[in-house]
Length: 497
Image (cartoon, rainbow, N blue to C red):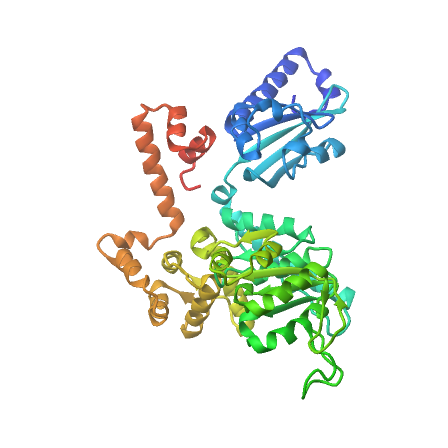
């Protein structure tokens, strides 16, 4: 019986009407069981009592080899970030939600189940989509932008209310500022959110321009230290001779020309907050031992002083270099590496997040327009296809630079492939020539269309070939293509989705 059905009203219906409603309820359950990507039932104590065949395929990814290690246990202990207990507590359904856990990101529904007197006796969980980035990309992209704007407004309002004392530096970004719904982007944000709940050191690894500093700000903003200062220092940008003073400060009159009052270092300035050490791989070996001691003891010794000064700062380090290789080469202290490498997070390069390029282009275009006081540029499909084909060695920073150059050099609000080509060639990108040759060569004009159209056509050709190979057997076709039967039906009925 559907959860929303009024049972007393049902009992008052004629027997034939009750039979029809019961048949409809069974039919709806069977429809969800076959058309969804998975289903589970929990009892009123929030224990898993049943899962269907589709759901069983998620068990290995959730960390379970046997079904009996999953079924019969509290749902909160076997499914990370579940909200099934809330449905049991409130009796209200959660019809559409995004769930992210070890198995991936899913679009789910949760429906309370009631007995004949209306008491909640359990809940039904339904996995609607197991690849939301593919099925709901336009919606997720718009939601990400709206969420970013909302978080930005909340942050500004909170800053106005808190009125931090003069000189205290606050974080500038939140997790909503890290735009993207690709699997790589979702995983980075998941790990970073977990890191924000800890006080252990975080090590952000990734190429230049991937957004490591933005994530450091976001981790601080979501941590228990968010009201404290966020102090960042780019080690590669400070001369080696000044780094010790930059980190640990200078005692009054430490050397000729030193400030009479002395000067606080970054560790002391970050007291009660977060210290962000960018490009930690460039730290001179002579200073690495002092940094390790400061992290271990929670004390610093200002330059020219014999007095130890305690500090309380959470450290987030970042590097675009291979720290493990530097350790093997003897260029980076092994003990310092292990001290920093407590919560490592790899930030994927843009070439591994090509699905995020359209929403990144939209976000960057709005930001460029805001700073220049103009309307956001409209990037045409052929230009988006060209952008998606680049390697982006400088990642998002390089993408922004290319968009800004193109927008400023254009006389119109639209950006097409020919305009981008000039900028890309002027930047000396080697991959632009073969990409354009392929796109503009014989038959290559087909590539200068929206990627969604090309992907949809490719899917339909693959489905047709698989159906032909299996003699029209839908289940065998789905297995051959590595998708669920529900996804296959959806692609056949709505080839554009």
